[in-house]
Structures are given as structure tokens and as C-alpha cells.
Image 1 (spheres, rainbow, N blue to C red):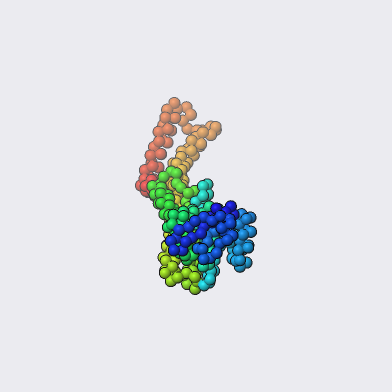
Image 2 (tube, helix red, strand yellow):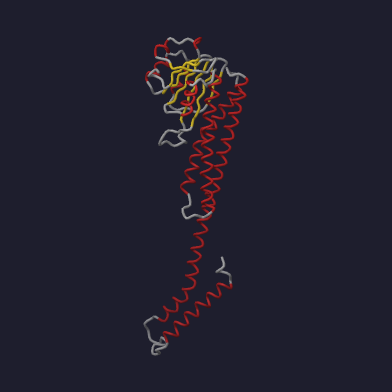
Length: 323
């Protein structure tokens, strides 16, 4: 394998088998030998140098080397240029931090680039080395788009399962309500959808723009487009469900707070007249009744208890204790 490229393969268009090329074999490659697939880390200086000398247009070269890209497609009868996004499955990475994949394909060459590992690219290379890969540039694009979309389907399924657990926790009014988890889930959905919407448009343009892809390949691309469309609809559904769940959680917290304030208000209402009476009889001035009566404290305490029961009876009658 050439040190300049992550994958450096020559694909047999009859069998779909591929073999690795050395640096010398790469320099001597001719279109009649087979389809050349190069996958590079666009930050590699050697790969950058080779690409600038590969005879591509300035726009194609700049797109393959661009650090920041937005999903799009430019297609003609001679070549296809695509920028796509894949789920980031690298260790210690957030899935919503999507990896940009750039692709150029003509009748004899396929060039892809990224700056991070893309599992779909790796699996595609493994299948090619096992003789189970695509046999044309169009079918290569289909296979790559299918694998990238399948990752998104799996990710959405995981998000739906996570949301279902959080919805159940909220409905059960668990003490550890997942406020932070819901906020993080909504953030992930918004970030992922930000890239999938333009990628959907890119797939649509591939289908409806004259290009090097055959009618059958475009039919398969339409199926991939419909799958991606369902993924976006599921993301919208997850976002809306998360919002409703957050609102339900906020309502539960508000209801709990109101119940506690209501209880405190009842306690205040009961003890307010008691405090008034004890304060009135506790003033240190002459004329306070019961000062010389040894039973006055007992009678006063009994009177306070009677007053409490009267208040509780009134509160119960007015249904204030039945909220």
C-alpha cells in the first residue's frame, strides 16, 4: 500500500475483486487495467501533492482537500463529485460530530478523502479485497451511500430507544428525571439533522441530474434517498417527542412545587391565629387574664387545640384539604 493513501486499490470491473497497488504500480496505472480507487487523508502532504498532479479540475481538487464541506453533488456525463456526511463511530467521539466524506468518480477512477476513520469506507475496502465489491464507479457510489445511510438508520434506532426510556422515566415520575439527558438528546438530533437535510438534497440531485450512473443505479439511489428521507422524518419525530417529554417534565415539577407551596400555605393559615393569640397574651403589661390562675395555661392550651380543630374542619368543609 502506498504510504500516501489509506486505501490504494485496483478494482477488476468484471469480478469486483481488488488488489493493493504499490507506489510504482500506482504511477504506471492505465484505465484499461481496471478501476482505480484511492482513499486518502486529505491532510497528508504526499496525498495532497499527488492529487494536485492527478489532472483534476481546480474545483474537484479543492473540494477533495477542503477541511469544511457541506453535503452536495455535482454530476455530469463524465464525472460525479459528492460531499457526504457519515456518523462518527470513532472511540471517544460524539456521533453527531459527523465525518465529512468527499468523493470524485469518473469512468476509470474513484477518489475519496476524509481526515478521520470512516467505518463504511473500511468495510467497503474489505469487501473489495474479498472479491465482493462493486464493479463500476456508479455501483461504488451506491454502495458507499447505502452504508453511510444504514449507519444513520441504526443511530436513529438507538436514539428512539433512549428516548423511550426517558419518556418512561418521566411518566413514572422518577425522582431522577432525565432533564439533562433530554436536553442532550435534542441537541444531538438537531446537530445530526443539520447535515442530513442537505445530504438528502444531494441524493435527490444524483437521481434527477444526467450523470454517468445508469438508470438501474439511479433506481437503487432512489431507494437510498427514500431511506434517508425516513431517517430525517424519524429525527423530526424524536425531536418533537423530546420536546413534549420536556414539557411534561416541566409540568410535573411545577405541580410538585405548587403542592408544596399549598401545604406551606395551609400550615401558615392554621398557625397565624395561634401566633396572634400567643403574642397577644405574651405582652408584658398588666391586665392579662389568668396571671393568678394556676389552671390558666391548661385552659389556654385547650383553647388553642380547639381552634386548630375548628380550622381543620372549616378547611375540610371548603374542600381546601382535598386538592
